[in-house]
Length: 499
Ligand code: NAD
Image (tube, rainbow, N blue to C red; front, side):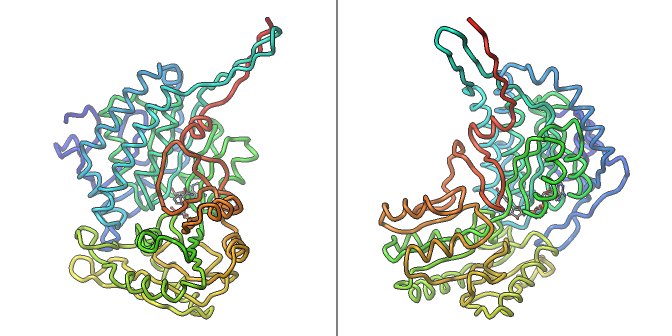
């Protein structure tokens, strides 16, 4: 494909998906370096080697991006939905057509197995664009008639310029989950991917340019949370912030944005319970629990990290689960046989090592895992860790209260419904929960009482993009997905006409 851009790698005649050594911001349709000239090193976590540099942008870059967005907004906000639908669908198509290159870039940047990037991350990125392209065509607002006196109708207008900030665990998947509804609703966007995994967001800049998204409608600015991220949150012209990341950063963002009366959507951390009753479908539960514990090296906010097992099946569960976890191969993410890839980087790796040390200090028994892995060869300097199962810890230990966000789960035993509810609801998070039982009445009663924004009964991570997605308690504020996302990215204005 031929692109009309100032992208330097393009000028050198390299391929659309080659990753340049210096990534660039995408502002007003231009590829430009950070105004400060400063860059951050980006490593491949499977090899430990630096493979590109990321712009270390600051408030000056954000100001330029806001000016570009301001220029584009008057036209984009009134662009007919049919036209937005076409452009977003073209972006989805280009993602699909370049699946292999994007998946490889995601794996090299994040450490996740290549088969996972191909099966989940990249297909979901195109699905996000397609879903919201279609969604905006069907988005309707309310009308309230006051008998023969008056009629009210609600306009849903774009918020204006919005900020989207995303984490490293599902890089392109979550980046596009925010950007697609924001663009569909007619906003101009200043978006920042995680500085830890910026590459697919950079490649998306090239894709949106090729798809004909007008210049300045989407501006992708790279950099650190405290500088680039906070500059987005603080900018007075950015009227809404959609953030996915840690509870710590969410609290900081809320403290800045709330006094400025910005709209805020915060998708934060989790410590999700996986509740297993003795009448469950054993085979399905076991297979899914392995996935819900360790998919993406346990680095999914929806992973079940506290496994609560009925006392009647506790010993049997422990034995089977541990023997199957031991079979999960940790290795080079490029190998099809690797069930587990690398952790995302050194800081996170050190955090996981420290969390397992803390679990031992608190009296936990490590049933399997707990060790660093050296897969050898090109991965001998990478960040690999065994999937780890721990038992013997009370619900109020640090290990069972704080998010670890890695391949570490704990087992706890329960005997009654009341006890398991108390255990499940005992921590400060409330993102998701999973329940395994054939007694559907019991499952529904428990589900209604759980502190969780999302509950799966006899399944996990079965996602319908129309459903409200988000958490309660310290897991966040607001909901994404479906109409919730389109409502977040629009302002409701009621107009009352007396008849
Ligand atoms: P993080 O909070 O460190 O960073 C997330 C993003 O926010 C990054 O782009 C970062 O640069 C930016 N950021 C950090 N501090 C900021 C600040 N003060 N102002 C503005 N931006 C800032 O999180 P992470 O380590 O990248 O991701 C892991 C966390 O994300 C985990 O807690 C996980 O549970 C959570 N998460 C939640 C969901 C969800 O849907 N609830 C989904 C995925 C990940």
